[in-house]
Length: 96
Image (cartoon, rainbow, N blue to C red):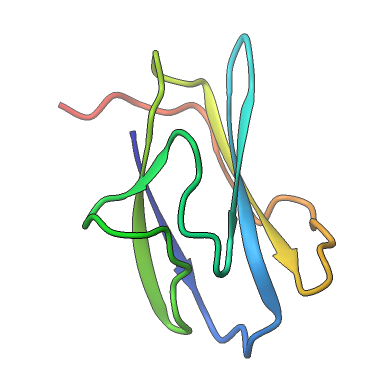
C-alpha cells in the first residue's frame, strides 16, 4: 500500500506522524525525523525514511497483508505529543 503525506507550513513544529491502518486488527507506524528505518515502511523512491519538507509531500510504502478498512494520520509535535488524527480515509477502495 502507498500512502502520500503532505506537510503544509509546519515551521519545524512537527517531530513526525503516526500512520494507523485498521480493520479487524490495527497497526500503527511511527514516522519520526532522523529515524532512518521503520519496520514495515519504506520510501516509495527508496532510501532512508524521511519527513516531507514544508509544502512538499513524500510517498511511503507500507507492507500490509490485506486491504485495510481505514487509514489515519496523526501528527506528532516536538516533545512527542501525538495529536488526534488530522486525516482519515474510510473506506479504502481498491484501485484498478
